[in-house]
Amino acid sequence: MGKGEHLGELEALVLASVLHVGDAANGAAVYRELEARGGRDPGVAAIHVTLRRLEAKGYLTSDIGTPSRRGGRPRRWYAPTDRGMRALGAFRRMWEDVLTDLALPEPETGR
Image (cartoon, rainbow, N blue to C red; front, side, top):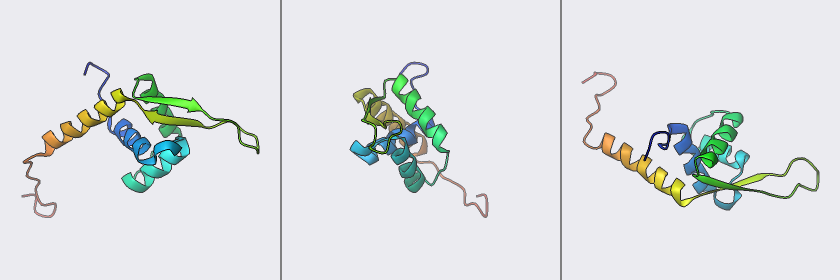
């Protein structure tokens, strides 16, 4: 991967959340999934910015749905690309490599 192609932590969490949500992956659903599974609350705006950034990198595609019967803006639905899947796999392997055989000290003792 070249410079700027690696996933950041929030990008990886958002991309994984898109995969977990599946066909119903819009900004709100991705936010709820990330909050429930990842225990994080980066804010809805940060999720939308990250989704757009992942799409610009070619890791996601999106389609705009039809407006609801109540009016309002149509929802944007996201799906991972093959490139996004490879990037997420590389992110996972990187952390597996970093953490393999790592001895963490006990928090109370520091040993």
